[in-house]
Image (cartoon, rainbow, N blue to C red; front, side, top):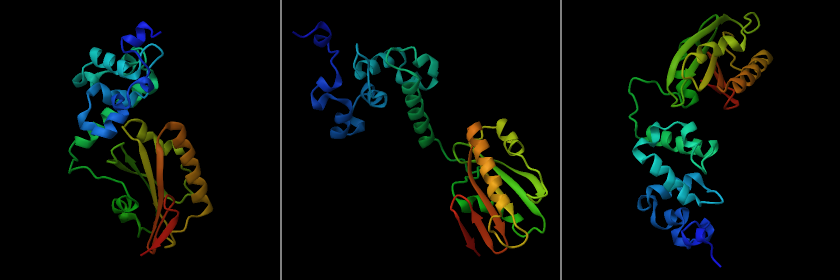
Length: 234
C-alpha cells in the first residue's frame, strides 16, 4: 500500500515518469524550457530519504529566491536539509560560471592563456646578458595581476626559495603563476638545476593551492616551455 509520503509527491526521482525527471526533461525540451527548481535539482543530483531532489530544490528557492541566491554563503546553504558542503559548492560554482560568462572582458587587462601570451610580456629579457627570473601572477580569470622580477644572476648563484616566489601571491587574488627566465648562453634547453627548481616550486604551489602553470626559458635562439614539454627555435 502506498505511504502518505508517496501520495504527497515525495517519491524518489526514479519513480517519477521519465518526462517529469529534471535531467531527462532538459534533454527532451532544452534547458530554457524547464523551471528554476528543476535546473537546481540537476545541479544537486540527489535528495534525501525523506525528500527527492526536486523537493530539496524547491525548498531552497523558497528560502532563497533565485535573485538572492548569489549572495548566500555556503554555510547558510548547508543548513537546508539535503544540501551539504559539496552540493553548496556546486551551486556557487554554477553561479560564478554564469557571472564570468556575462561579465565584460576588461580591455585594460592582459590575459594570459597561452605560452605566447606569457612570452609577449617577458620578451624583453630574452637578449639580456645577465640571467633574469620573472614571475607572472595571474587570477582565476587568467588576467595578469603583476609581473615581478624575483632575481638576477643564475639559478646556481641565486638561492631562490619557493617562498620568495609565492610571497606576492599571498596578498593578491592570485590563482596561478608562470615563471619565466632567460639563458644568456642562447640555448633555451633546461639545465638539471632548472628541472629541480621547477619541481620544487610545483610542489610548493600544490601545498599553497596556487598552480604553477608553466616555467618558460627564453633565449636568443628560441624558448623552452615545461608545460608544452618542448623547445621552439626562432
